[in-house]
Length: 170
Image (cartoon, rainbow, N blue to C red):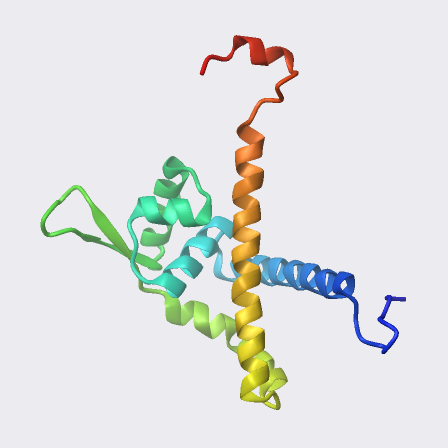
């Protein structure tokens, strides 16, 4: 049983747990969609980034998806061969390219059923409720990205008392 406040409202811990459940459900959904479309998790992350933010360079995509640039090259080659993306060369600098999603409709069609069901859940919400939810989810995404960046930085730091610290130079 979940804890509630004296007024019967959910606690902060309960809300955070619900977000964790949502994350797990989205992970499962993405794996099922990936299997259906024969694309990997990393491929789906790239397509999602392109869908949300439009054309990007391979380096921008690598940064946004936390993917090593060499791995990104393989992902983009795979997606290009399968018709998911196109590389558009920079007219001023032939060495650089922007990646454009071309298979977004296929992806959208696969997610259409769940998108319709989610829209049904939200149909009775007021504009103020939708605004609050949208702002919260955007801010929560920012918190998660910032926390991920902190964890990544910490994973590269060496504990000052560790034996390997003496071999490091600044």
